[in-house]
Image 1 (tube, helix red, strand yellow):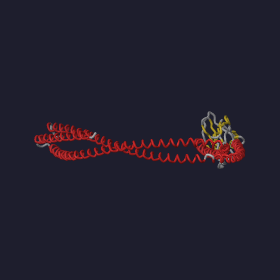
Image 2 (cartoon, rainbow, N blue to C red; image 1 turned 90 degrees about the vertical axis):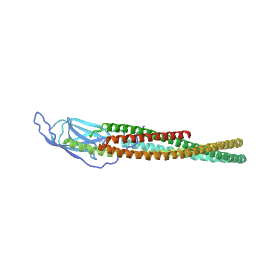
Image 3 (tube, one colour; image 1 turned 30 degrees about the vertical axis):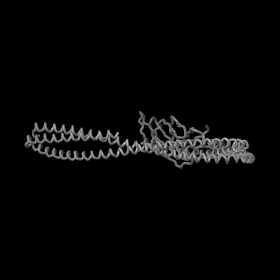
Length: 444
């Protein structure tokens, strides 16, 4: 597939001249060092490349770096240079990397490096796009001419079709009246059916809600009973521990230049890339618009063609329609019969919905009675809870006396009596929990 236009806008002009810090190179012999300034011209397809990153290295050490300006030239100054062999590397996001190796830099010399593009040039893509748009416009014009011819043919056929339509008008009126009556019956049956289904659904919902409430109450009753059983066991353990305690009571540089140049070059290349994307987007929009116009005209042509064919065969269609009207009349009679049957089915469903509604009402009433019974049991529970609270207060007072360590024998007897009261209260609680379980079970 051919590539489309990537139009690169004009970038902000500027020339960057960076100065590398002195990089000492130790050799066996003394080498004369001097400051050098060189320029690197970067082009591609005869056009200056702006924003290219240029780096000069000796071995693995960067001794200078810069970025090309609007003219495609990067001027780089090196403070101290000892005639060592160096490499010049040029990189740009839109071109392939290029390198000049084993160079001895000469002050004031201009170096030229040519890059190869990763894709087609902007001019090539522009030409392709314009040619494609022109081709689309020519096809659109031909389509408009053809559409006009088809419209004329359709108008002639329409006149013939109109005469044929008049012949089947009487049959149509008869059929419409029969269909109207059938639709009325059908609508009445649908209404009855809808109401019956609604009543059935509501009855089922009430039944499910009642069952959900009953299950929730049962689960809560069982959970409370289990909790109270665990509390009773804990009290027994605490009582045993207190008894035991009473029994045994006892008182107790160039890199900076490279980094800066790289950062600026990356920023410049990013701007170029964004502008290239914007140019590509606009080019695609232009082509899409041309395509859209072409497709719209094509649709118009197809519609005209279809209309012409339809009008041309209009007379035959009208005759077929007269025959279809006769068949439709029979179908209307069939629909009336089906509507009568549907009404009977709706009446039957209504009766079933009434029965379901009555059953749901009975279950709701049973749930209401269950709530009343459980409410009475809750009143008994309140008495047990009050008594339990009183026993806890007695236990606290007794524990305070034990801590003082006086009259432990007498306190031991009081503890036995208090444990007996707790035990009797636990038995009373157990009987009440059993009564709850039986009550909820009977409601099933």
